[in-house]
Image 1 (cartoon, rainbow, N blue to C red):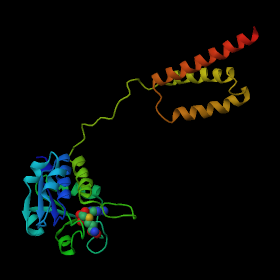
Image 2 (image 1 turned 30 degrees about the vertical axis):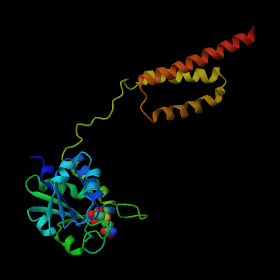
Image 3 (image 1 turned 135 degrees about the vertical axis):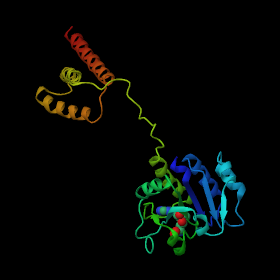
Image 4 (image 1 turned 180 degrees about the vertical axis):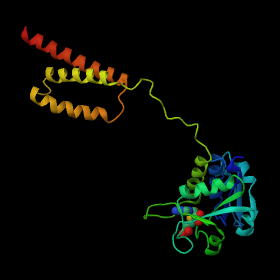
Length: 250
Ligand code: SAH
C-alpha cells in the first residue's frame, strides 16, 4: 500500500479559506488526499477556498470536520505536530527531513497525522502534548513563521520524495559524449598555437596561460561538441592571423 494514502493532514482552527484551498492544492500535488479540519472558524470564506484549491476542489469537498484534535487523530499512530517556535514541548523538534521517515514507516501499516496550527497563534501547548513528534522548518530570523500552506508543502514534499515520488525523474543527459584526454590535448595544442599566432601572449607566458585555461576547462564537463566549437574558433583565428601576416608581407 502507498503510505501516502494513510497520511492525514490536520489543520487546527484555520482562519482563512484561502489557506485551506491552497493546502488542498498542495496535498493533491503531493499525492495526499485525507484532509481534516478541527473546529474551523464559522465565517470561513469557502469561495476563496475553492478559488485557491484550483483542480483540487474534490479534495476540499471531501474534508472531515472534528471538534477537537484528539478526535481528529484518534485512529493515528504517529502524530507529528508542527511549530514555528522552539521552547517548551518543542525542544525535541526535528527537521521535516528527519521526521518524514518516522511518518512514512508508520504509515506503511497505520494511519499517521501531520498537524498544523492556527495562522495567528499556532498550536497550543495542550495540542502539542498530543503529538508524538514535533517538526520545525528552519527559516530566517528575519521572519520565522511560514504561511500555513507553505509549511504544509515543505513537510508533504519530504513525505512524497520518501514514498518514491519523483524517482522516475532523470536529469537531462548531454547528447554529445564527454571529451576524452586525446581530444582535450588537441584543443590545448591548437589554442597554444592560436594564442601565439594572434599575439595574445608571448612564448614565455604561454605555459602559465595554458595552466589557467586547463583549469577553466576542467571546471565543468567538456563534451566532444564543445571541443569541436572551441577548436573551430581557434582554427579560424589562426587563419585570420595568417591572412593578416600575408597581407602585411605583400
Ligand atoms: N504565530 C504562529 C505562527 C502560525 S503559522 C506561531 O507562532 O506559532 C501557522 C502554522 O504553520 C503553524 O502553526 C505551523 O503549523 C505552521 N508553520 C509555520 N511556520 C512553521 C515553521 N517554521 N516550522 C513548522 N511549522 C510552521
